[in-house]
Amino acid sequence: WEHYLSCDGTPDPTVPQEVNTFMSLWHDNQDEDVQLVMEKEEVVLNLIEKLESLLLETSPDEITEKQRDQYQEFILQLQDLLRKKYNEATQNLLKTASMYEDAETGNMHTAIKDKNSTFCIWVNLKKKARFKSYVFQEAGHGFDLPKSLALSSVAVRVLHTRYDHVSPLAASLKENSSNTDDAKETEEETEKNSDILDVTSQGIWLFFMCSTTKVLRLSILYEEPGGREEAPRVVDLQQLVPVGGVYHIDALQLPPQAQDVGDWSMVELLDVGLEVYPYSPGEAEDGTQEAVQITLRLPDNVIYFKVPVVARWEPAGQQWRIDGISNITYEAEEKSISFRMGAFYTVALLQDAHLNLPYQAWELHPTGVDEGLFTVTAVFATIQIQIK
Image 1 (tube, rainbow, N blue to C red):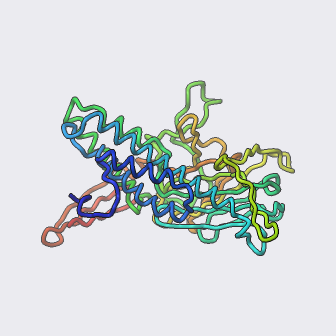
Image 2: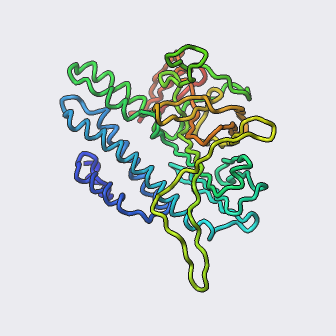
Image 3: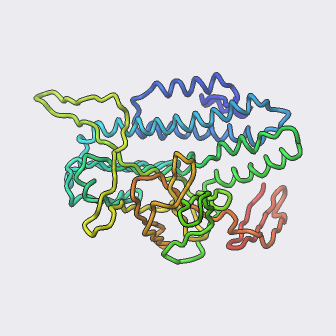
């Protein structure tokens, strides 16, 4: 009834035909810009949230296994479609980059923000070594490229999504909801996961910074089989969780730009889609390996208890890991973090999931008619929740 009365034109997540039609129509529209994708992103995120709630909160006797699999598949399809739409919009923007070049540098740059994402892109049109670094003033993110990239036809994109569609959360929803034989056990697991989902979907994260230490020390990791010395450093998501969203940092191929010929504007069209720039780090002048310097401005609605752990996503292994990232500097007062990468990665800032445990005390007392104040005293903070 809530969906019916809203009458906002969005699909009902429980009706497969409506979800399929929504995805099909959006998939066929390939001429959207970044701003339009951000507007549609809000609808997609709401759909995903509703589907996750159905998986986590519906009792086993009210949902079939077929429906559960279908909701799970819709979540993955919507996440994938949103990624594709950002790539299509990026490609459309890159095709006309030369029309928006900066008068001072001759390159193109822009940053677009809304409550769900921040899209930043820099296009190296002039290929001059002295313009190898840039800071997006609107977002606070920045980079410093190796000289080899500064002389190449490359674009750098920093896409910060305040949600996490990278970590295997969707898969865990299915795993945690698969046991329908024991109703009591399923209900307990559903309640547990619902609590996690509620916390991570809110606009404020309850992670505070408790140290002004500038250099990051890494711990809470597990080793893959093969010994301690050569084992890749892989993040254990039972101990560390991404906080503040995901940063997709990419080097992209620059498509052919429009050329003015008389009264005509001509451009070569390539039917290849958005292409990643084939960057392989070479050797710097001092003999060390080249690296990309990245600076990220931390979100205002995120508070860290401790110095964040910087991790990169490895698609092949479907895991977060910390190798390939070095020279990490965390500035608590400036709310920024800088690091060097040997390649371009999707990164996230992680916190210990249990650093506020055990809770020290809790209190619930009335503040009026049908109102109360719930207070939880944790290790680093006291949290108050007003209930009406």
